[in-house]
Length: 317
Image 1 (cartoon, rainbow, N blue to C red):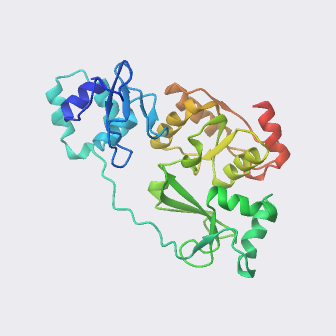
Image 2 (cartoon, rainbow, N blue to C red):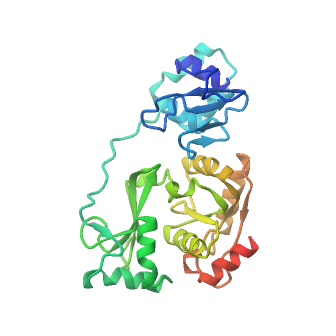
Image 3 (tube, rainbow, N blue to C red):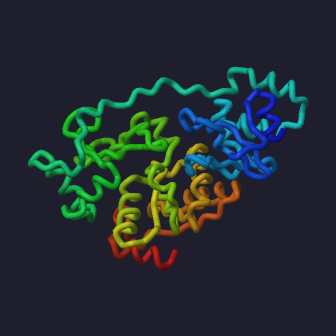
C-alpha cells in the first residue's frame, strides 16, 4: 500500500492543490504541531517522505514515523501496511485489532520544585560546580552552559545530588535525566524512563543543523563535544541516545535530523565499538550514511576527552 492509500482508508483529509502543496506532494495537518491552522505537512506522493513548513524537525525520508503518529501504531505495523499487497478492506480490519496499536500511558513528570538552575550560587551548590570543574568545565563556563542547555541541579527530591538535563519534544519538556555526582548506585536516572528513551538529547537545539552531528552514549559525552564545538566557533553538534541500545523511535529522529547535517558521526565509549558498528549498519539500512569514530586511546568515553581531543576529532572526522 502507498502512504496515500493508507490515508484514504483511514479517512485522513489531505489536499492535492493549494498554496501549501508542493509539486508532486499532498498536504495534511501536521500531527506533531499543536493546532496546525492549515495543512503544513507535505508528503511526497512517490516516496512518502514528509516535511512540515512550520517546524523543520517534523520531517522524515520515509513515512514510517508519520504513520506511527497518525495511526498511533508501532513501527512494525507501519512497515506491514506499507508492504501489504492484499485487499485494502482486509488491511483495515487488521488495523482495527487493538493489539496492533501502542497506547501511551498517562505520563506524570517529576516534581520540579527541587530543581534550580545549575549556576545557582551558594555553599550548598558548590558540590555541583566542583563536579563540573573536575569534568573539564571551569566555573567561568558554567553560567553559559546553564543558559544554553537549561541545566539544573537538585538538593532534594527524586533528582537529589544530580545534575539534570531536560529532554524536549519541540519546545516542550517531556522528561528529565540526571547524572549523580556523589557516586550513587545509579549513575543516570531518567523519568519517565520509557519516554526519555524514545528521544534524543537536545532535539530542540539540533533543528538548525550544522556540519557534523556526533551521536554519543550519555549526556555528559554530548555536553563535552557539543559545548567545546560551540565555544570554539564550530558548527558541529552532539546528541546522545542514553546508552548503546538505540530505540526505533531514536532511529526515526536521526532520520529526521540527518538532512540538516553534512555528516553523522557515531562516537561511542571505548569498548563499545561493536555497538557503534551495529548502529551504523542500522542507519545504513534506512538510507543514512554515518561514520564511526573511536575516542583517543587511553580515554574512557567522549565525556573524558580534553578540549584539545574534541578539536582534534573535528579535524579528522
